[in-house]
Amino acid sequence: MSVVAIVPAAGRGERLGLGLPKALALVGGLTMVARAVDGLVEGGVDHVVVAAPPGDEDTVRAALAHRAVQVVPGADDRVGSVDAALAALPAGTEVVLVHDAARCLCPPAVVRAVVDAVRAGHRAVVPATAVADTLKRTDPAGVVTATVDRRGLAAVQTPQGFDVATLRAAHERARAHRAAGEPVTATDDAGLAEAMGVSVATVPGDPRAFKVTTPLDLAMAEALVTAGPA
Ligand code: C5P
Image 1 (cartoon, rainbow, N blue to C red):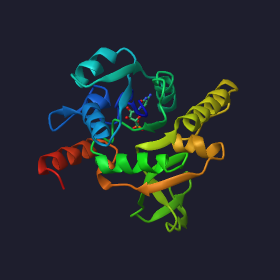
Image 2: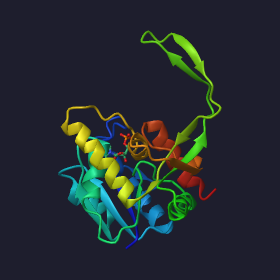
Image 3: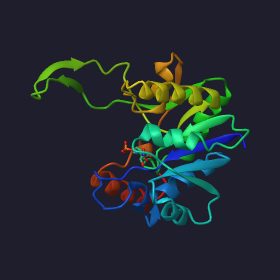
């Protein structure tokens, strides 16, 4: 049981507007959470722990059908949902991935690359892609105050990979900050590792690992599945 993936799937999916948890939205007739789990297993993951919206665990279990997956209740935010799944990791876990259910079309090759980089000795690894748009800084009124040099910037995706001790320590630190009333501003797990001084390596990401957030994203995911393997 050495490579375990945590799938935070406890988001309510309000921006998607379907009236159901985002992970249960269908893409090509299959829920996003089931697609995400299948991609991870194809990429070499041995065991998966899914954080479901609290109260919807049975629905998520049913959506995962025959898949041998552990389902735990998630929390109010993503960091809390990952933390809940971390508490359920099986003994013997060496490499742990954290992968958004919403990035359900991530190619298995990206999963493999992340696992290989952790196995090669990196404590934290993220898939990264170049930024295509020009980036501006704006003031609260929406007026541009600066153009950001995009050279040296990367957009990062999931799965993010860690040796298990690093991810546990990063979340323990975040938990302690919260308990002390300090805000936890990281929007990904690598951000929590960075905050404790861990160097984060990158592997090439893939445009198909985009995060389904809006109805347009869902339409793009559906079109990609209909078009078949690219
Ligand atoms: O909301 P957002 O798109 O940033 O969520 C990213 C991932 O984190 C999704 O897969 C979502 O289900 C998950 N999430 C979670 N628990 C929350 C909020 C989001 O597991 N409370």
